[in-house]
Image (cartoon, rainbow, N blue to C red):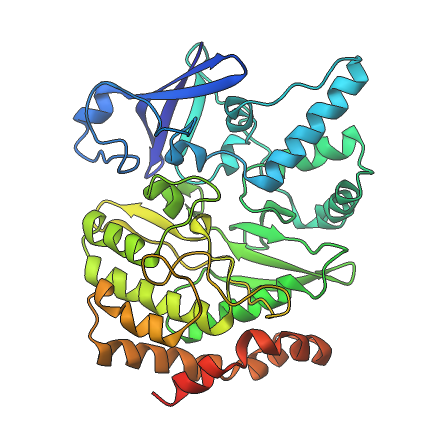
Length: 414
């Protein structure tokens, strides 16, 4: 049994939140949670997630899960986990041992504290300092080297030293693609997304294009820019869970809904959370409807529950984070079906479904059609936005099926 203290940074002040009790038996691990009395008594306290109401006692994760989603959001996702597993393999090989199967606690505690997602922080109860306290941000001048290491990693040609360079700056971030936490020229914390050698087209360029379109369509996005490193494009996006060094509490929709990777949910369920957890539920739900419409029109079909997020503020409660991970996908690569359902059980990119679901967001049909038409008008200008972003003509033609479809043409006529 290992115990870890959970703290939270609010306006640069640390507050004890609770205790993690990690129990490993027969090859599996269960991570229990208990709130600290000081957090329960704090006037600014709030539940870490709906499944952890502010009350005394020990909480166990939902059936089939080993960790609460709010804690899991602070752990590495696919990209970071693969790096840590590969590092364990290298270390075991060097020592002549069998590689360990890393536990949830191993992953959670491997993240650099200064770059960890959100505002939660962790340390062993026997220690005063945080594990991996610093080194979580890469300078831009290191991008070329880190990109080369990432390429070697995906070719299974990396060295142990390669991983030691990449691990501190890469394990705090979600997703499966190569990325690192960094600082831009002005010192703002950013996420730097790297290309892969096997990419069909420049995914970083097309995410930037989608972000620009979203911004023009009235959907908040984080400041972002494309830069070139060794002739390749890198997307820098400011972290919205940081204001300089101040940490902002973050929760994924997956954690908010008590789901786990691979489980589906719907936009109406996310909207219900906004009505229940925030102070501006109706406005937030209607903003979510706009995002859902945009995802339909650009074929952003990888809109799974990790790709919807919430930020906490004392005056607004839990509210939508800026939109992120917006990626149009050509129809020959993936069918036009959203990962998050438009109504309760169907994600097919359909205007009929969009209209039928409007009531879940407290929109009249007329209001819903107005939003659809507004978003379509912006989306229809995608070729000009793509050219302005520096997309090649061949790539623009390659991506046409993601945007130029009957749904867009019909939306423009509403």
